[in-house]
Length: 258
Image (cartoon, rainbow, N blue to C red; front, side, top):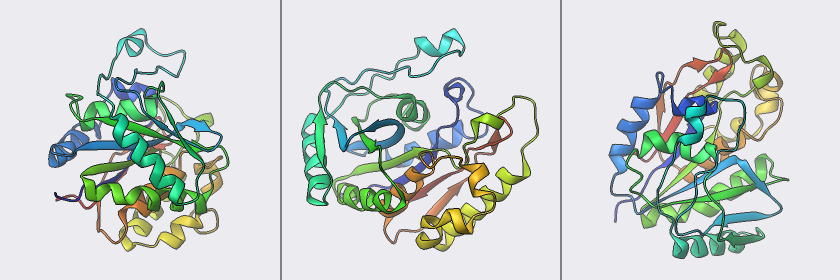
């Protein structure tokens, strides 16, 4: 069985589900390169729990965990199947690495999962399960989480960290040009990812330009570390997603894509 890739995808605002922009078609082309994947395991900051939870529903619901957007967004459905047997195996891997992990048989897919998956696997024909982020996740435990999930790749399971390369919603504007600080942070991240400099990515608060402005809180950055740790020594592929709403870098990375 061919080893599956590890991905970091920027899911941006929920409106990305209706506005593919520069990134949507590129994610679809990327997804075609792992059409034979046995499953997708995705980590999103929009599911945070005490300890780690793994979604084990056979038919996970599409969760519209946002408000105040266009009515069309609330009609969208992503009907990918779950895979309860894989959920149990994934929880076991996490427990082996010291995480307190449980299977949640009812949890559906939040927008951090289903919005990018609408482009990656538009036919919703690959089983999907979601892994939560613990409330106390930090840079070190995010790396440990990615390493715990890495063995799934040898089973043909794609490991995805879904976040946002920059994420300061307080500054988001519809008509503004891209902020220079967002460009600078995205350029720094690209350099670190391409160099395989996981230590710089880990210590981004000290090394990255405008780190606090780009990420007032960590939760949308940490999935990048999950994906980088799951990638191991594989070489990254950069996907230039541009910047939306002036401040949200949509850049993505893929490791081990064949």
